[in-house]
Amino acid sequence: MSLLKELGIDIYRFSISWARLYPHGDEETPNEEGIKFYDHIFKEVHKAGMKIFLTMNHYAVPLYLVEHYGGWTNRKLIEFYERFATVVFEN
Image (cartoon, rainbow, N blue to C red; front, side, top):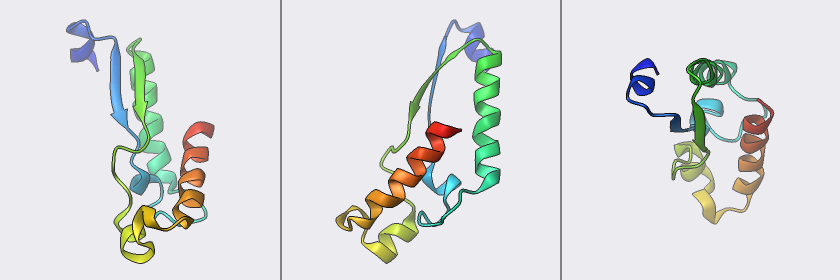
């Protein structure tokens, strides 16, 4: 972060990996290590005085969901994505 700040960059863009929080995508509870990983990033960006430009789904769906549910062709993924999005917003 310090190098970005030194360059005068005041915003950090990154994506939250669905698979880091939910390795298969259909779990009931998120991976706590994944939450800690992103918590650390948010703290470092905040400490550097930078803003965050966050994306939540950059065309990365957990492979398990594609192999076992057919990806976005299955409406069940809406429920799984909603669970993922809720965890991101609450944390």
